[in-house]
Image (cartoon, rainbow, N blue to C red; front, side):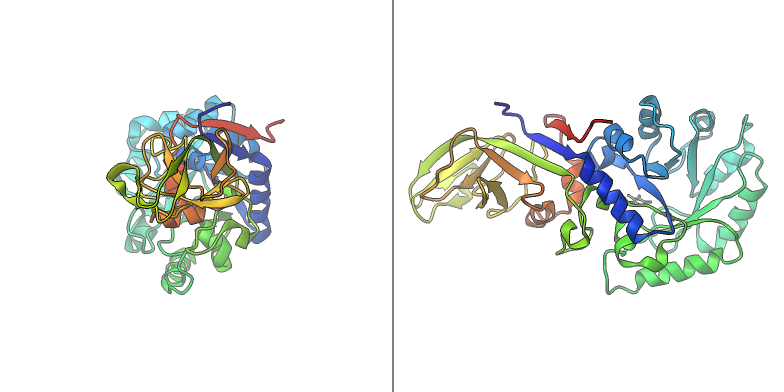
Amino acid sequence: MSRRPVAQIDLLALQQNLQRVKQLAPDSQVLAVLKANAYGHGLVKVAQKLTAADAFAVARIDEALALRTAGIVKPIVLLEGFYEAAELPLLLANNLQTIVHNELQLQALEQTPLEGQLKVWLKIDTGMHRLGIDPAEVDNVYRRLWQCSNVLPGIRLMSHFSCADELDSATTSKQLALFQQLCADKAEQHSLANSAAILAWPATHGQWVRPGLMLHGISPFVGKQGADHQLQPVMRLSSRLIAIRKVKAGDTVGYAGLWRAKTDTFIGVIAVGYGDGYPRHAANGTPVWLNGREVPLAGRVSMDMITVDLGHFCKDKIGDEAVLWGPELAIERVAAQAETIAYELLCNITPRVQYQYLGDNG
Ligand SMILES: *Cc1c(COP(=O)(O)O)cnc(C)c1O
């Protein structure tokens, strides 16, 4: 019996979620976003299975090089672009496409002698105010890229939404209108939509959509779950019961005695904790799936263990499997109980967790 938590990754569900993206955005190509170890699911395994995507996007060059080392040949886009001119030959040699979002990158492209041309995505700041060229500068930057001998013709135009997950916000429509106005006189391909926009803002789809979270079967909207969008959870995080303890009414459990038994009951100890990536801030009552029912977290999350209230009449045994999130228990619910988002839970999974890939037969 393994006492290590296990993350089972359902690669067929992953593929079906990509098909769902294509169904929602039938006229767009798919730039699958695989940053942060493919949202904690395993960069290379996920890329190998997403053969139906048109290209991949990562945040940083080392993520792109890891994909190339693994033999991935699809186009790869660097979402933050390059950081210095010295990286440009590496981009060229590895067939990496770069985003250009600032003047320094533009100058580096203009001034570095290169033995070939790079594919460039021009990132426009339409209101996120994180990365991107100011609207007033877009025409100038676009013209300079167009004239730059290191840049391939066909400059893709992109922007990122700040509030696409807020269905009643006017921000997304405003960002889209500004983008369309800035791009109206440029015959180029457009890319705007993250998962929330793919699901809720069809007018934003353009030639390239950029799904990340939804590929893993998770909803970007507060109060919704992947199943509400016909998506299937890809990760199932589980561990085992390693102790069952009888406590009396009034006894407290765990650090700081933060949970107190109202009646005599049994406490189950499960071998997963914040050292594995289970959120330390998960509140008392956070659900855990065990033997066909939900049991509530009882007491503070420790580094290697959590404690749950099994109830007075439990039939659970040491060694039984507990599911922290997965098809039985939506990760969105756990995230809400920990006052965070599923994105963070996935990124926080640590190397102590053992990965098992299902449907990994080519
Ligand atoms: C992370 C990211 C995405 C994907 O966002 P999701 O909400 O996970 O779909 C798309 N575009 C950019 C620029 C990103 O950084």
